[in-house]
Length: 371
Ligand SMILES: CSC[C@H]1O[C@H](OP(=O)(O)O)[C@H](O)[C@@H]1O
Image 1 (cartoon, rainbow, N blue to C red):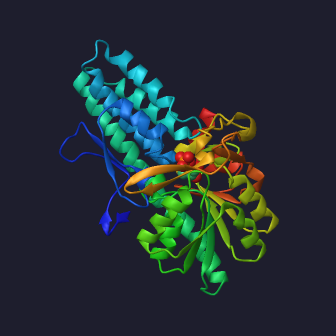
Image 2: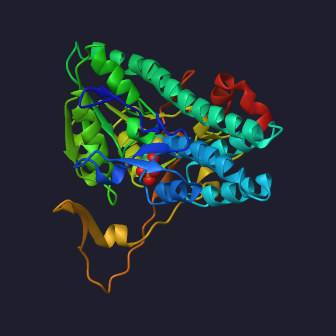
């Protein structure tokens, strides 16, 4: 996508120093667009854990590049493979819910193991990291094309009137390498001249919607309105929402969807108001082994201070201000699970399917031997 008219992605290898990976440090958006140099596995792990980069697809790509940095470091280590294994463990420990993290790490480990000596392993690691990133961008572009058909159908039914879409958190290009998952159909519809407007959930406590989705949509000229998380049901009751599209961090082979906390409540409200609720995802986000999302998907619990404090930019620095009594504990669940029965359909790079095992495996038959 573009920032101030200039094409960019969320992560890439430095054009002049190939041992440096560069990322957009999303903690500073929407106020400042800061590119951060990542030269070690440890700093990549910090970037993922502390959400300099976030979002399932981008977490996977960051892990892929992290293993490239690990291979560079391993050349100087006494034992190449054991250094790689310790880097794998460090990166894997950063965030538990997005399945893309483990998927990318395993893909890298398997690819690197085919190298005979250090330099070949490093080349393989770099090529695999770039392939993961390029594939993520291409899958999201294709999700956009498939999701466009859903928006076009609603637009036609409304005789070309504006299609009002609600999205939760940021499943935009900032959560992937490019295009995004939930936003890809929105960008595709906007670019095709279809009238769309997006209601953006602010998404407490990290405000990915307010800080990131609103910024992304504004950069692309997509009309949008920021709302508090709890307003979505009200808008649905009053016929102001035609479609809900969210992303997901892990979707089971049976169609249960883990996504940012609050997604389940949006799905309940959509069901109650007969509004289509779609989840957009690249196939790297399927968990082929899990069948019951509610009992199996690990739900990340983050620092309670993300709830008890709000952060903002003040005099060029990120400042944190307490908003609750010091004596009041907070519980910070970062994700929830929406059962498949509340999901109208899944928008993937291969097309749209129902949120059930047979439909998913029909679109992805290779998943059968993984379940
Ligand atoms: C589908 S990737 C975007 C996904 O990731 C977000 O979580 P976080 O910002 O904590 O990484 C949220 O669940 C989005 O839907």
